[in-house]
Image (cartoon, rainbow, N blue to C red; front, top):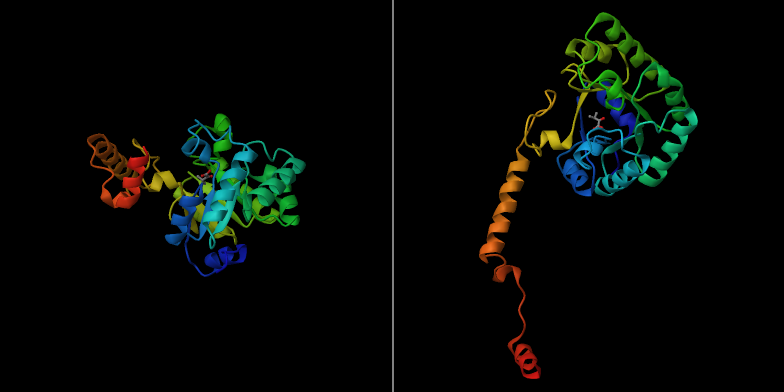
Length: 277
Ligand code: KIV
């Protein structure tokens, strides 16, 4: 058994096979993702919200990414594992090299994802030249949310042209793939056709070479309204609450544990124990 490689990832686009990417953040979620046949796992900095309960991805640091990447690597043996570099950890080329060294040596991911366009192309080039596979991320880039908001991007001509130019710059700099987040489907398709490397959409339409979704969104782990780009493939959260309230009820009424979950002492041992007492 071997892991999906960057070459396999490219081959999927070349052969017209769509790529399913999913976030995972720990050992258990990685095991399940692999059982389901997910070929590419993203240890996303969305862990700031879904695992740490923060409002944004901004407080996530390199140590957090290493901690979660390690668990995901232990739970997966086949998937290509891409790890986000967190907010401001790649502000300069040297910062990026330092963060990449730590995440890849201590966390163990195979590739890194960075948010940004042409302005980060020199960083993407440097990392790529150093042997680090880099995935880009354009459109709604949550690390820049205080600048651009959490809304659809590149809906007008100028912004759409810029996004296309950014995508080409990332490809030229050596990126092996690009996430396109919440942009018009038509633009998602145009970018995907213009590039030779795979595009992975999230709210960027069916014309991308693959899709990425967040673990908690696809499994329906949170109550309330899901983002428009997410689809709840199951209501696992509801099932968990049901199962756990059942557990609480049974403990409270004394119907759990039963004989089946208990071990017993041999009668002579019990007798001796009582006598000594
Ligand atoms: O952090 C993340 O989970 C992501 C995906 C939403 C693309 O970047």
